Image (cartoon, rainbow, N blue to C red; front, side, top):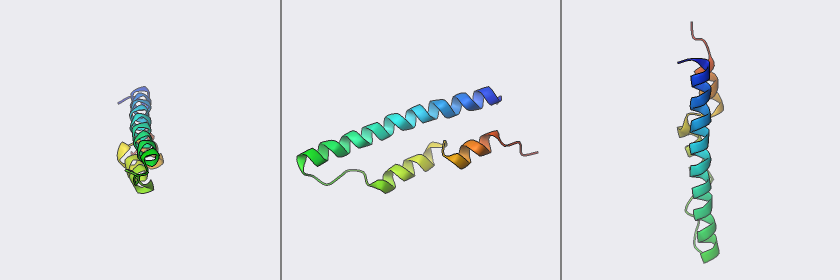
Length: 67
């Protein structure tokens, strides 16, 4: 994979992550408005970042030359 392809992958995955976080935040707002408990706690957001493959270490590792 070229560096440009790697960058495109990170950008695409970041867009997916932003969309998923927005959905989680919206669900939390709906529940808060209804007086219900939140659907997603902080840990769910942190886990999503870790699983996305675009957190700091994953991005650095993608570009690191492991020769």
